[in-house]
Image (cartoon, chains in turn brown, green):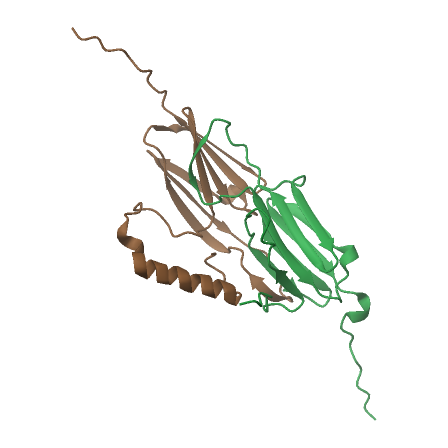
Length: 147
Length: 131
């Protein structure tokens, strides 16, 4: 589920994994084309994207970040968010589980074509980075008269 | 397959969620131990202090949180890595942990829970007498 899950998981999850692999073999996971920039599930940080006629809202669920260290850029309709998450570790402690993401991350999100790269806002609250991108003013439907 | 008990940590074993409840997100955790106690850190982005619920019931520590983001009302979700609006995970505590003095802190979506050990079970230095 998470890329950096190094500890042992319960046998139940091994069993799920095995069933999943068998299903992949049977039906072929790669038959359907996926987005060229699509990442495997479980990438950090998880992203949700919502859209309204006025704007596109991107939410990156990245707890415990320093927002000053984030690198957010947009090129046409391609939004890139890169940064580093440093997880605090205690020196003298013994660790049983280390599932939380630690290190550099980078995610590229393809937005709808009609976004305006000049009008982007970003805010970080409760561990969620919210990026709002305005869309170009939608042209109203026009009546076309046949001469 | 009937034995689902987590064998990773004998002191803070994970409890499998009850089947009848709504599906929820399983927050990733780091669990560490020192001679003083156990520290659990969980990533729960989108959870505010008001939406967080930490309970100890007998020997089970449950952490729950509501994922709340300011989504536009008329918004249509076009991509969702996170599909549930709640985080939930629970752990079985062992007897030497002092469950009545658990401390919890939430900052930028990171929950830190400290569970101290009872004073009488903390390791003591044993002097070796040389005659």
